[in-house]
Amino acid sequence: MKKITVLGGGIGGVETAIALKKEGFDVELISDRDSLLVYPISIWVPTGEKSINEVRIPLKEIANARGFKLTIDRVTQIKGKENSFFLEKGGKRTDFDYLVVALGQSKLKHKGIENTLSVCGSPDEILQIKEKIDKLVKNKEGKIAFGFGGNPKAPEAVRGGPVFEVMFNVHNYLKKLGLRKNFEITFFAPMPKPGARLGEKALKMMDMMFKNMGINRITGKKIKEFTENSVIFEDGSSIEADLIVFTPAGDGHPVVKNSDLTKTEAGFLKIEDTCQVAGFDNIYGVGDSASIEGPDWRAKQGHLAEVMGRITAHNIAVKEGKKSGALQGYKEHINIMCLMDTGNGGALAYRTDSKAMLIPLPVVGHWMKKAWGIYYRLNKLGKIPRLI
Image (cartoon, rainbow, N blue to C red):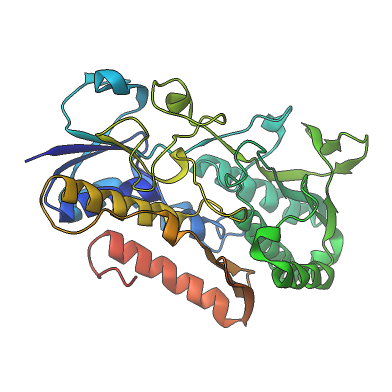
């Protein structure tokens, strides 16, 4: 039986391991974390609607339910030409026939980035956002700045949706407490039209939401640096803030950047449509570790990472003669799809080459996302089948 090792225990890596096991391979998942953080529902941790334990799933439980081997260790180096990788505790490893790299991405390092907190960071970082919001609520006033950045070398490596969601949830949380009038909320981004990849109609609806919620907006200004209590732009203007929630654009993972695998200028894996790393027959790239080719509006999302994982499993199975059929590609599945939660409702965002829409879902949207969170956990633990 062929041995396949998956590096990375995030959304893409876990789905890849599950799909490979279904194809009948001997699968090992290696992760430096012992749990899968479900980022789409971690947006409720800062406002206390969910605890951190409610938005993560122990990898051991998934591995036991799905039948793959789990190793908790940190990958320190990959040598593709030597068909090996290295672990912090486990040392050099060569015991695999195929390798799937799903290590995720790092973040661009802005000057003073240590003065910010990201909603797409570690569990500890997300909890720090909650602690700071709790402190401001206790003081009954404050200034909060929410923003995200871009990467000109990898325009698809942007995480804007979660920032919008946490900001809208904080707005409604403060409103419920009767404190919203005491807080100044400002959104900022270096691009002139953040959210433009969702289409013009979506932009107009977002404009309306900002106005209705009384959220200030500063866009089109490049960020110079962050201080403990401010965001400073290159034109000399600034935002004063007691809390800066900022998610930088993605950058290539250090292990990928330092490897001999084929990479883009930004340090992401250069992959074929089949998810195979260019120039390597037995190495594949999934999710945020890989560069995504496609239309200008493309974006890395969890559902695309899962699609890439299933395509990788299918293509290896075809290659090994376990199943018949043609090889599959990820590019035809590129779209933007997310249920954007606002705390008191939501909106369904969807974008393809032929369609761009943002459908308001008052009240029901919030509960639909809650239901998705339950479904996702049960599915990963093998208790209910995957619906799509």
